[in-house]
Image 1 (spheres, one colour):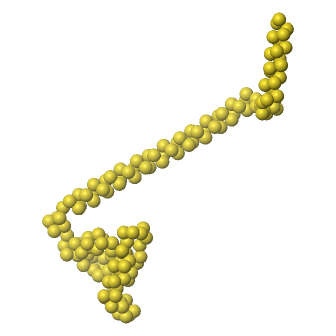
Image 2 (cartoon, rainbow, N blue to C red; image 1 turned 90 degrees about the vertical axis):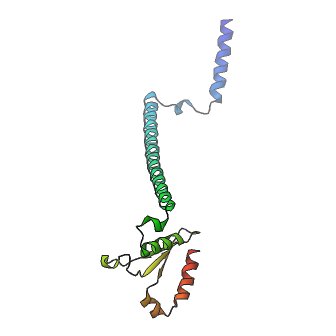
Image 3 (spheres, rainbow, N blue to C red; image 1 turned 180 degrees about the horizontal axis):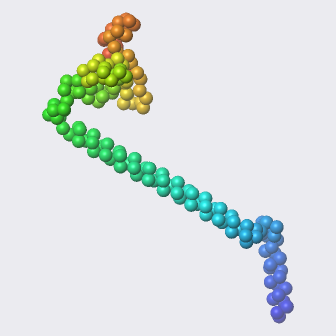
Length: 160
């Protein structure tokens, strides 16, 4: 009886060995297996570290975004004329920026006072994420023969 059971088990074991996809030569030693596991653990740790760093950067950006939104809300809550800090040029600059025009002043610090004329406008359209630069100083317009009306039309087209 034991002999029959032994033969049956041996037959089953032989069948199982023949059905496996890996041969005995494919098996790794314990040392190789542990080395591979250490390498994979190291990779896992590196990935977790990168994920944590990315999450920290994201949290920082989100915090700055919340701050910026709060600041914007605070600025929009008050009326510009009641704030007292806006003079005529500051109010015009605020309107320009809300419409999509960003004046660019000369690089010379003496010419960048709020009352100084600007030579170029950066137009930031609401529909696109890119800006276009337009020269608007009087000398350039005279030199190229552009009228103020034509220039204004081009600027409005640029911010639409």
